[in-house]
Image (tube, rainbow, N blue to C red; front, side, top):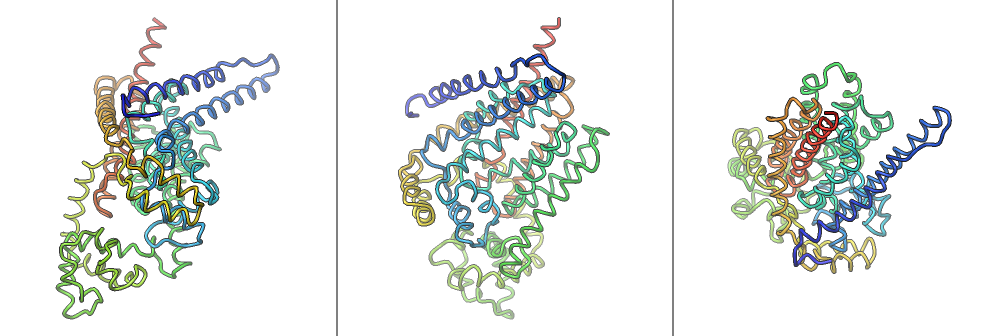
Length: 498
């Protein structure tokens, strides 16, 4: 398979064939007849048919959403993949990331191969999209149509680039959709589905530091919007489960770091990372220049050296003043004091910087951020040490490892998908608002607000990077397609009845 000539046409053909074959399976399962018998037997037969068609959809979605990794001949990797994939195997607690993504994927890869992680992530997102479509359309959009929507997302969005990468970024849309389903759709979910979503949302919050403020904001937003769109339809106790999930996630992150380092923090080196950002932006440098004559921080000796360095230079550069002071663990207590001092001294400057970063983050959403040849060759030997030489070889010889991923070509398709997604949402919201069910309108509003909030949080905490918005921007294309498909299906049914 090659994408050098007509990439869109070739991929569309491949996905179309896969979709048609799986649609036949799903459709035949949906249309299967039951033998004559008692009503309970017929009910059980219908339930088995529904489960079979759902499994077929999830399997098909898993394969389709893994196409980028399959084309790459290896899972996609970023520099942080090293910590996420190896910490649990080495029984380590990373200083700058959550330990829970590594724990979660450990039963899948078993230190042998990362491919089950890729397919598992694809299955998880495929199933969530099915649940959302089933909820907002009231069953009008069938499973076969949901599979076609996913096929469109495979070509015209960043989704398969997110599911194919070994990073917890895949859980950002899981948190958003999980909260939406539990607040707006719990009356349409089976008991097992509600428990599944509660656990999945809890895990999704716990696997990434940015997901804590993101989840908090989304929960508050959902509880405000719920009475506007589904009043008196959902028991208060069901959305309240989200509050429990949030505190369980936060508590588990605090507990693991307290147990390991006896410090009550979400990540033991989080202050070092925040300090690097504020030094880069200026407030921390101003605070140090003001404080160093009276407070003897170790970093005061390198105050002049820090000027002009980016936060990435400070964290990872070979001659970084941070490294001259010591390891991240050694610097963390001092960094914590400097961070608090800077926050109390320059709160308005920090706020202005956060707002500027949030605005810039809204303009950065290209897929493939960090999927470079250099990162693949950095990650490969480190994974090879823990997994096997075969894993190292597969990453080095992959398209990413050879610098041959067609990222630029597909970014154009993603822009097209984003434009059409926005257009479909606006058209359906303005011209067909009377046709759309309340839950579909709620999804449009919730996703738009969730994407903006994601940009605000990640821009403020870490700075603008494409991968932070690419992990959720595809939801606009998804919601646009779901809205268009619903209007078309309703119109078609009206024409048949007429």
